[in-house]
Image: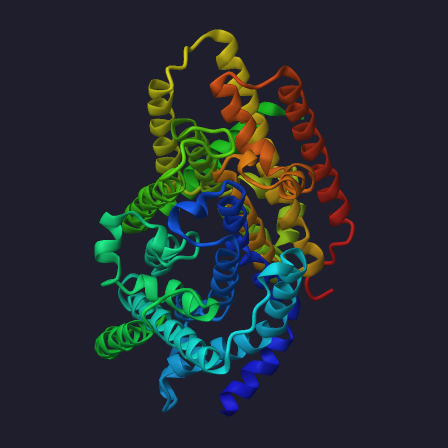
Length: 254
Length: 264
């Protein structure tokens, strides 16, 4: 908790940057523009309004599930900052975790402002989700954040072996970008992709929480359980690779 | 301006940065896979758009592929030259090493924009050219001299505009110190270059041709490839490119006046 407080005040200092971060997440809106402007949505049986809600929610989910652990950890480990963290009786990833949460809190008002502008331009898409759905989608967004955090932490641990893990992360980011539903809802994917995609973690990162929040049709219990299954799969993997990595660790400059 | 001296210096730059980048050979392999996957991903996205309609913004799928190809080439150029160098500016300013750059008897903009090179971007450029040749075949484009000059002019103008945009944002570091995120914003806007401009609504089209000339970067060269482009559009692009280059140069010199080195 104290960690969270410290990081929050840290983050408040960088408000401008976080605002810029929020702006850089508006790609879903451009995609929405392509979809509606070319009447592509008719083919997948989603109305304009539902689609615009979907992309707004995708924007929100993305805002609150962005993870950049790899980049922080790589920098820290190259600079040799990890060594003092390792001495402390706390897994350094808790520190990064608190950092991310704090950043999300700071980001919240900016995301709201962007949503406000979105509603000014698309007044017909205003809707208020009921409380149960809202809570469920917050939970699923958080779970999506957890999945991404775990995946990235696993990649970050590869720093112990390769030193430049961020290029692996960039590689992983590509399927995340195209398959998570950030650019196009998963419903619209061709059948040969849909047949296997629901077994991967990707659609549960953005598509599922966004569908849930926007009120589009989705399998709530199935989605949530898949998210939890993935977390249970990834967590032991992270623990394993972390303990292996620690043994491998040699401080820089020593 | 002593051109020969600059060429000689550039050769040295190439040598040193290639040598240091080749230390990370697996990195280059990973970057190559990333580039291939990202191309597959965007073609996949495009195929979703064309799933049930033959035209998007008046472009057929085969024609829209040209835009992808040009985007890939330009993205490769960005990754090879612009990205590694201009993110370096941020580092120079934060750590106060810009002083050393300014003291060198060489143009500072030249030094800063060409010092580093990232060889994995070459592969992306190659990938883009492969796709481009494939597009030329399936669209049955006839290669002749006027077409080649036109495409060469528009492509180099796109590169100039792209460079100026990157350089412009990196220059603002002198005031704001941390501009990683501004670069992210630029990146996400550039993403739009993957799609034909006509597929957007009118207001966005205006925005992307007046404020951030992304329209010029990929759409006009692609139109040249298809033989759709009018002369005035090409001239306009040349004009915009020169304007951007001159402004970014002026802006750099202007910003330097505000540069107070670290610890002073």
